[in-house]
Image 1 (cartoon, rainbow, N blue to C red):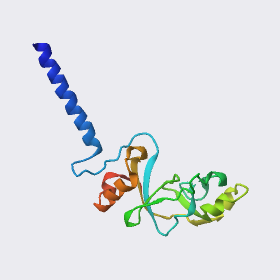
Image 2 (cartoon, rainbow, N blue to C red):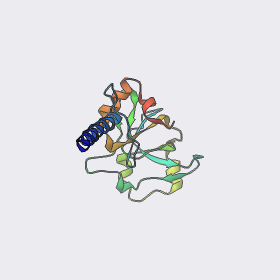
Image 3 (cartoon, rainbow, N blue to C red):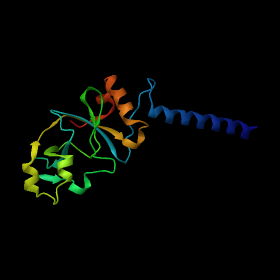
Image 4 (cartoon, rainbow, N blue to C red):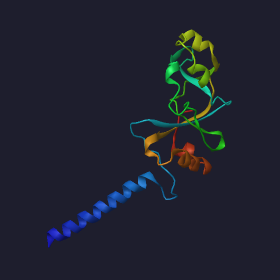
Length: 170
């Protein structure tokens, strides 16, 4: 009898734990809750101007030098270029790998992909359009945790919870 009671309690406890785990991913308003686990981040941002077709590079913290940039041959994907995904209210979902020290080059993705040699760091730095192009930057957790990232991020934007749910970087 004690074994039966223990088994029933164990099953009820496991079901309760499973429901709690599912609730961690979606709250009562059926909105997505980001999962901050290792993996590719879902970076959502706004810029001061439209840089959507311009190549991003990463600058040093003091913005005095380029520290990371793509090779011209790595810019094109099989399906085109890694333009950001347009979201509601002027937000963008990063598809290239930007961060708080991003800057955008004068070269578009298409122009940059046609370069035959990797530009020097000085040449890249001289091609920067704006050293401080971000208005806002948020880390919304692991990109693979989303069922439909643009749709779920737009829902957060629409209900004005993006900055409350995601980690605000800038």
